Length: 233
Image (cartoon, rainbow, N blue to C red):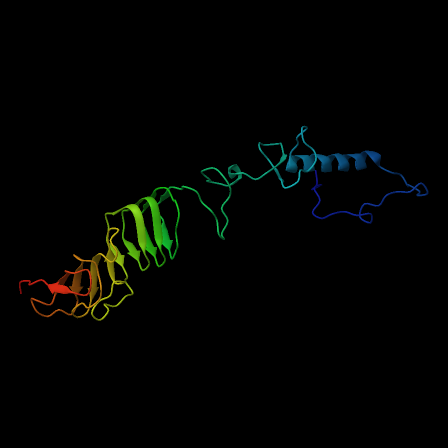
């Protein structure tokens, strides 16, 4: 059999309709019927058959749920190779994902807020803010130039924060690690003796301290008063 399946749409010129005045000279009806049958068989072989549904349905595509059959139906995850999970497809721009489990991603420059469920990650690199209402577990390194907040955050790798921030002169309450619900309580860093306001009990690391009394300080008043630690040489 030749290739009966069409490669382009036919029209009244390529498939002329005979009129009642046409003179048909020695027509070969059997050959014509053979070609028509071959074309029908080829189309059915390519597209499949389904006696229960023959008309297109709005917002669906013609699919093959099994060999030799077809069906007009909505696209589901079963049509995507290697798909998993349930719900809607996720497209590139502004998707909403509810309570996923993300395993070993590399996340670059995100701003992640809201309830994310559990995140288990190998390496996280973020220049924006990460807020996790559940558990953020990292087995690799965590690099943040933005903020990190969550109920439980654990890592077996190294945490690097504010990697693009130079030690500010005399320190600043925006340079360091904040802890607890107490405002400005944490461990801060800077160059030179601290003069900024922080919560009482906060620690300050002096990157330019050159003597046993200028390397480390503790805030004693909850204001700008810092007392130095005396360390061994």
